[in-house]
Image (spheres, rainbow, N blue to C red):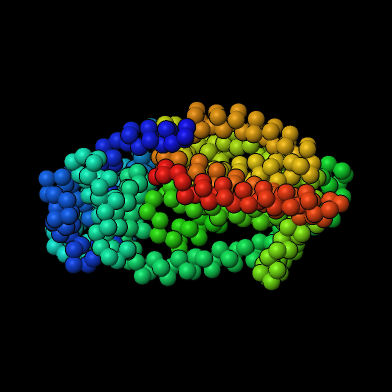
Length: 484
């Protein structure tokens, strides 16, 4: 209830025009123009309630010109900074097709090139504006419609405008700074095929990652550098390889999934990275050396899952104690922000200090973003939950871990890192969802342990009733709260 209060407060404070705008997807080809979209919503609601309509347009040529202008402007800034630092106007060798290479004044040359591109950008903009007035290839099947008040926004989101669920789909728009325009321009059929390839890539990553985990652990165990190395090296190796996973997963998400905003990409990363860590951290000892063989065995006899957990996980409690201790050091290293520092030092040689600071932000969103951070924090919490009964020291280590997190990320998020637009609680809800799933894993583990070690079946039967309650709680959590 406290979260819902914060959620509704966040929704009420959404700024204009975002608070009065909807995103419309799946517009039929014969309605792909701003005038046609306006007429459609005017017929469905009223012409008086529509303030603005903007259809997404094919602007690849314009984007290339803008990117080229941005690159030349950066080069011009570097030349001006060099002039300010050295007191000598910089020159560079200019190679032009059909002419002898010759030296030119860098500042004047880049200024002229930027001016030429400004003219090309203006011409391309006017061409797009002219062609987009009619239905045609210039307009895409997505649009943003702004209403005069929020009442009609909510009405539009609740209505079904077509019997086809993929046409005239009205949703809440993302923050304008997070919109992924390339995905909004992609054809629906191409998106579907691309997503299938993405799922195959993720499954291949699952199948290939287990041998890597086992190989790293065996390599660390084969090197004898004393008891400290023997206790921390396997978990340190696993932590290092897990730190590369968000980068690979985000590459798959960016290349194969048509997500409308960067925050949605982080949300998908949160889910996938969480399940990777459930399998390769929480359940790694139960799965063994071959992930595919484990899946086959589980498919043949799903009821054996608690027995597998009970047979293997209790042996690995010391591994998870070491794993949590290693996490402490990763949080402190994150506090240094060494990647941003290295970027700042590198850019300081090319740009003034203020510009170098801007270019060194934000931090890499694959490892340091909302998604991967939330997944790691949830797994650390679940280690304390799942193994807390088997080894009472593990919850204490988890508590120390989150005490360090409170200090480190309380400073980073509030005082050091740049502010990012959020989804208004989606990550919090996903994390609670994952904690409930982890509680089910804990109950399955304890059911197996009690059935295996108790003198009779009664303790295991009690644990099964708790499992029924947890499944009911999970269903209630998913269905009951109307937080969106």
